[in-house]
Length: 424
Ligand code: GDP
Ligand code: IMO
Ligand code: MG
Image (tube, rainbow, N blue to C red):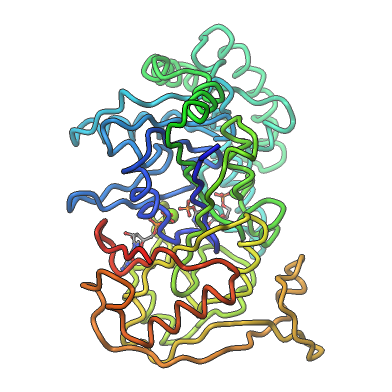
């Protein structure tokens, strides 16, 4: 089958929205498979900027079917807000479908997310506060509420009361917080259910049938390899599987659905939240990249930590995702930032050189980067249309990234706008 997945190859915010938008323009169907409104995907479409959180980015194309799969955790308050915001801007959401099995984020989850972070003090994860972790906890504890339940008021009422009993005990007895009013939540969520019911469907069937009839299906990844619950920098990760395998699973189709897997990275590295970051530039140069690249979170507005490109990370992402092609975004941001460096390996505290990303952050914290140094560039590259338009320095840098990471660099972002994408 001929599906394409777009996945994050670093710590998120690699500009997946822009690459997804490029593929969505040629796709019949776009599926979101995991995560929730912790994602923030920016799409600059006809000079207008859209920040999408739960809504698949294909919604900006009128003929494209947009699916939210079973693996997603869905906050109906936010989704209704997104739908209303898009409609107000003249974007039709008629082609949206939501899987019956997707789990519902409730105010209990957002409240516990916040209280749990507060209670951790210095060792907090730095979550987006969207209730993502607590919602997945309930899913795996088999006490979650699914989209099917939400749109069946009697079932919803019963399940919400059960959840309220369990979660209010946690809020009050563990965290010393204030209990939430179940009746108020039921009344509010009943309104969301009424708005969202028309989109309910079986996304597994829709995705499978589309693939079988040779339609172009795009799996829109959220988050990234290093935020994966198993393969990320645990515990500083999200609670889902942002890897390509998670894209197929969360949509409800087999892994052979994917024939092309595009890994998206920036020409440098960023992360929001806590945890070790070997190539971090905690200095003026890092500040310049943050400023030039407008590196502030789409979902929370937090400043992103910045650093040099880390090929150990992207090589790891290539392995755990099966990446077939790389997209390297935001090359333009590196103009006038001095020499370019690529981290090719790590040196451990006992002097050993390692090429594979360590399995545990305690080991990662002991690693310092081994760099290859490249000349920087001062030219404006925003008008480059093909690879050969780029300065030699950029060409060498990108070619080396492809060699070191184990997949060719096929897409190069040289500006935020849709047309600032070089296909190599
Ligand atoms: P996502 O979460 O991976 O979709 O990425 P975000 O939308 O959170 O952050 C990426 C930011 O970089 C957005 O503001 C994009 O508009 C912007 N962007 C994407 N590609 C490029 C590029 O090639 N150059 C520049 N300057 N900005 C880009
Ligand atoms: P997109 O799709 C960057 C990070 C949070 C935090 C950790 C856990 O826009 O690339 P969570 O709220 O998921 O429990 O937070 O994961 N995180 C992201 N960082 N981009 C994202 O999504 C992220 N989604 C979650 O900052 O460190
Ligand atoms: Mg983002």
